[in-house]
Amino acid sequence: MAQVKGSALLARLHFVQARYGTQGLERLLAALSPEQQRLLRGDLLPHTWASYQHFLDLCVTIDQLFGQGDLALCYEMGRYAAEQNLPTLYRIFYRLGSPLYIFRKAARVWEVHYDSGRLVPIQEGERQVRIRVLDFERPHRAHCLSIKGWAARSIEMSGAVIDDMKEDRCRVWGDSSCEMWLRWK
Image 1 (cartoon, one colour):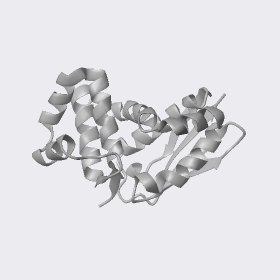
Image 2 (cartoon, helix red, strand yellow; image 1 turned 180 degrees about the vertical axis):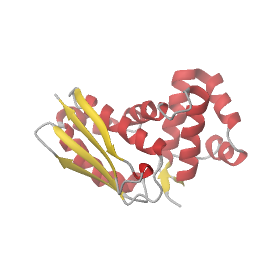
Image 3 (cartoon, one colour; image 1 turned 60 degrees about the vertical axis):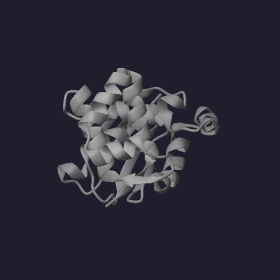
Image 4 (tube, helix red, strand yellow; image 1 turned 135 degrees about the horizontal axis):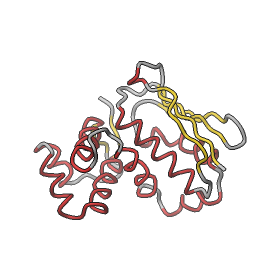
């Protein structure tokens, strides 16, 4: 089973705390399984590995409790995580680099955050990129929407403005890869 870094789960907890306060966070934790509660209340650190299933369960539960149950809140969580998980040093690179530079770097650090799959950015014009997620063990819409939110916020953090964005393909829909296309100005 695929694994993700603890930072992905911790960013979702911080998202709930920031948006819904301590009561919202307690409501979330109470809705999770005893195993997940132990993990999230325990010694989970940003650099430790956690089960991808725990990540999915957390995202889906947050969306059910605080969203519409359609996983759309996962996009917002991905946006939040883009900032939450970005060390201060890298913020300088975001401000100085172009979105293409950021996506090329993200492709290299994918394996630091996931033990499955790879992210492949493909330049499709001066201010356009296609992001392809290949060979990920078990795709899920919550994850795809999180990546989409992360990509959108990454473009904005570089100082650009998103002009257009769409998901072209998703393995959940039966496609061979998960892909999104982004254009900025």
